[in-house]
Amino acid sequence: MESSEQTQCVSNEHPAGGSGVNGHFDAMVKCAAAPGGSAPAAPQPPGAESGSPRPVMESWREERTRSAEDNETSLPSLAAAYTSILRGLGEDPQRQGLLKTPWRAATAMQFFTKGYQQKIIDVLNDAIFDEDHDEMVIVKDIDMFSMCEHHLVPIFGRVHIGYLPNKRVLGLSKLARIVEIYSRRLQVQERLTKQIAVAITEALQPTGVGVVIEATHMCMVMRGVQKMNSKTVTSTMLGVFREDPKTRDEFLALIRS
Ligand SMILES: [Zn+2]
Image 1 (tube, rainbow, N blue to C red):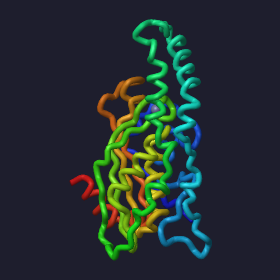
Image 2 (cartoon, rainbow, N blue to C red):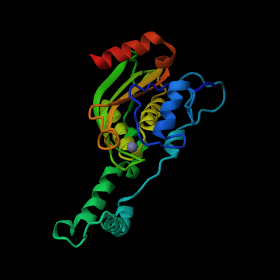
Image 3 (spheres, rainbow, N blue to C red):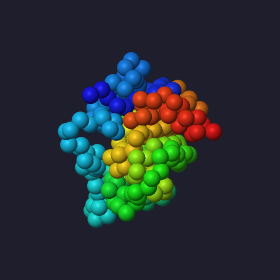
Image 4 (cartoon, rainbow, N blue to C red):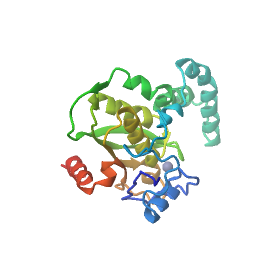
């Protein structure tokens, strides 16, 4: 089975020099060289499975979870780590303005990564409806805040989601919740894009799904060549969104309108 994922990269100037399959750099090179050929865990396109049991909720099983208790337990060591970061930067952690900084920073970091505390399946419970609707559903301009896993600095931007239902629809607000859960983790934009598309595919088994993310990476903006206005655009197209240019074009036109 060919990979069912398609990634487009509009801006690819990431200075990370990332390595590994999820590195910005590698991913960008791959999408330039072989579009759609790099999916490490390529989801099956809707309707493409042939008798073999569908890997039900495959992506959801991989979820790491963190509890509120875990947050409490790990807060002191996280704060201590921030204290040594301050020292390592040549600062004085005892300076008045910094006295509470390690605790604040640790708490903030737990918040920025609170997607580890949540499960997609909890969001979807009671939110999937049988509906004889076969027109494209689009939710665009979903705000997204994430953290680059290479530099631990923010990635922020907007997510556009479209899908073509196949007798099942998802409560509209749940699309934004899926974005929230996956984005509030350490991420690379390519993986985030794909995870959202795969979650929707597994939940609804729709005829097709398209996810486009436009984002600014602070690691690009604040360091290296400091490209203030560069944006990275990634997309994952599954099912008819991948196979049928007309459907894909309709989606892309609608999210741009
Ligand atoms: Zn980065």
